[in-house]
Length: 121
Image (cartoon, rainbow, N blue to C red):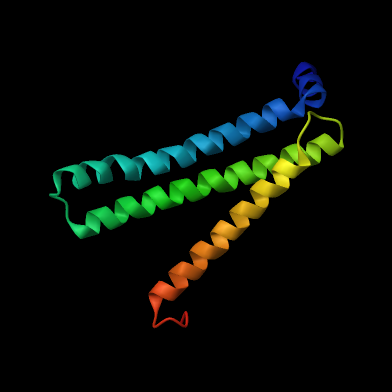
């Protein structure tokens, strides 16, 4: 047990990265679960609308989760570099966070405008 703790405190980013990899695999499986059934229906043009909406929703959620996991990973790397664990480019981290924030706000605004008569209600 002491060996694991010593290794963790020597390089915690390895173990934190492993947790992020597991979360990214889960998000990719959600994406893949929506992509595979959806792409066959698009190629054969024999699918019904309800099935394609479910596949589209899974693809969007998988993509969102991958982007969120990547943004959180960049923030964790940035904060860890302040304490001497690894290196990170602050410009890259803030650019990724800024682009992801703009994309999510734009996506939410677009969905809100699609819902109603243009005023978001």
